Length: 70
Image (cartoon, rainbow, N blue to C red; front, side, top):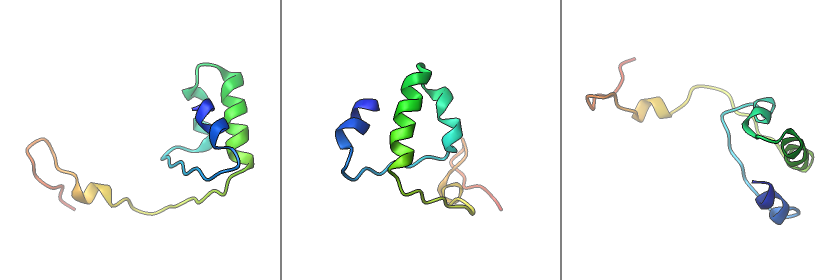
């Protein structure tokens, strides 16, 4: 991920996540690497935070192949 961010620096890069940025730090084994990478991403980004219901559960099926009920 760090190599990708360095390679794309100054160019467009779209990253989507269902986690808050503060939740990203424990995902990296090296805290110094996490800090460096997230600092680059956060300080040069435009963040679009979306809220509301997800459309995914509507198309999801259970183990028996049935759509969920409301």
